Length: 189
Image (tube, rainbow, N blue to C red):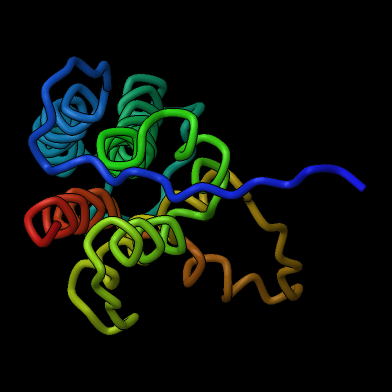
């Protein structure tokens, strides 16, 4: 039989002495900067759209507009990813700060974002927060927005094709919501 040992881990204070490297603030900056760019592109598209009332166009017939639309969609997706990266990066920093790198990596790093947030706050701050708490609601929104991009689902659309429009996410509002959720999470944390 092996000699098993157990020891109590040491929880670091919120303001320990030391240095840490993290990219969460860079991703937060990217989300905001990209959102400003997205807003400008959306205004340009709305101003220059070649048909009335936003009716669909053949992108091959309007290649410049097609390029703008692709850029708009790329920026919107990037904002959603950067928002989630900023939140996850902050949680990773907080976990390493409070628990130390080894304990954090061994026990928390691979958790899904919402579970990681709740677990870290429980362990590090002795606070059990519900799924209805604004911090967790913001984490859920950021996580769902990210997951819809990085785990894309296929959906069969009936022949009528009337459902296809309902599946599209509104741009730029979806990106705005991602940044808003990111900021809400960071503010509540």
